[in-house]
Image (tube, rainbow, N blue to C red; front, side, top):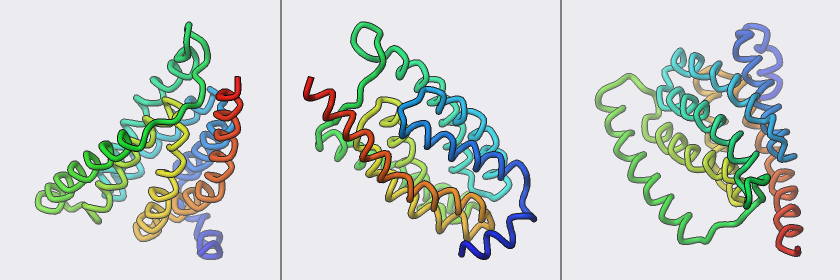
Length: 200
């Protein structure tokens, strides 16, 4: 797979390449809890809105519009979302809150998937819808610095690799392979941060 990407990468657009590089920058900065991650997110997602429309992954394109909004929100919350307008700390949320959110995600994905299958030329309407709504929830968790976001991203990114590869977006598929490699580092780093805060 990686060999195929390397040989074919030259034929893919500079727009996709720029989006991939900025998206990797975003994740590396998120791991370090660096607020500049949100600037990378704004530019990368703007590129992907166009890319996914062209690939007929309409829910993915809509998701990137959402990412643009969350990037602005994330910047503000990370900067002054803590007590007394201080930097937002890492937190954990109870299991029942995650269970309720996933129930909503499944219902929305089923409804949207049905609509896309019936009224559009979308590919993988149900899978695309599921990863989209799950990513909306997970991105909100990143913006709130909720530790469990990393577990969601493992599942979302693994499915996304297959979707993007099948739609002739090898650089983006590679991006999500890189994400899967980096996610454990984010989980470890944020867990350390949460434990340090809890010990204070």
